[in-house]
Length: 453
Image (cartoon, rainbow, N blue to C red):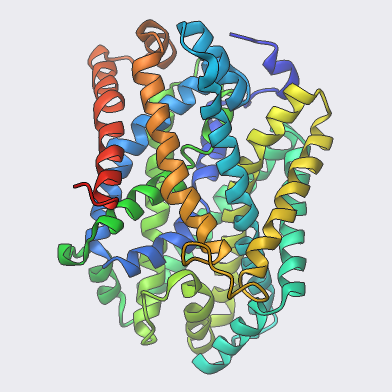
């Protein structure tokens, strides 16, 4: 379908390039910043088990569906859904599902860039020795003063957004692909070094026990929703990124193999981040359920006190910036692709308009930490509202309808042809998961959260 798409955007040079790109989209702040603190807030091991089940039974089938829909549609998510609905003889209002993904990715980028700005600032702070010898009081004061300053947050938010825009403006091969070939191996190397250090700490076994020993008494309905939302967030599902990346995927590449590789790499990074972080947290008597500030208020104390802390502090926050960049370029890409295809403007102009809009919206999250900190909507600050709205509501709802569309609306011969699974029974398993298990699980979790079940 619609091969002219290649002329406007190009395509990945190889399956390896696509795997690096999609893994880069999946591996980001969700793994290294968010996963450890929400695992800490929800009891550790039990949460990890629920999260892994969500990845396997919901995440992978929906990821296969998104890649398949993107490659068959060969357009941005909005127009791909419109074209696929037309091909299936369905109502073309399905294109609103594409808009849901584009908007969700855009909203996430607006606050994601703010947190990535924190990581960028802390990489510099670690490099100049701001954590050396600092205790909990000094580190808390450093963090409080930092987030209380709109000027500082705007500066780092701006710097990170500019880096994202510059990479994406250069296109698929010259910008995104080249950057990811450097960012992803660098991230894995730094993470392995940090895990190796964690293994030398006295609290390594305590950290491992916390992460992998389940205590189901600490699980609530909201914990399950959080685990499901985290699976969608960290795999970049329901936000248009995987679908638009799939539109650049050559036809000979196996969708199933790449989906399993991407989900596997993403899960390994999340678990390794926990293995690296929790032993350091426990070794220094810190609190694993510290919330979003976990790695900014607790880990610097550890880096300031431990042997080699300067080096590991710099490595950790540089890794965080790498992870954030690899994801941010996928968050802006659906909006850029839509602008290029529908407004007939250059890729550079599309990056400027999309980046500028996300940058401006990011101010709302920045101010929610200082001048608007007292402003609450549904008992949440703007930052926390955006995070909850996107990760726990928009992404699972988007994933639900992607599963419905792929399993119930698309013609079976089209999805089977696009997936091209070597073993015929594999397609039957995928259809069962995407038709019944994935949407059913999302629906039941929502019923439980709203008190129906």
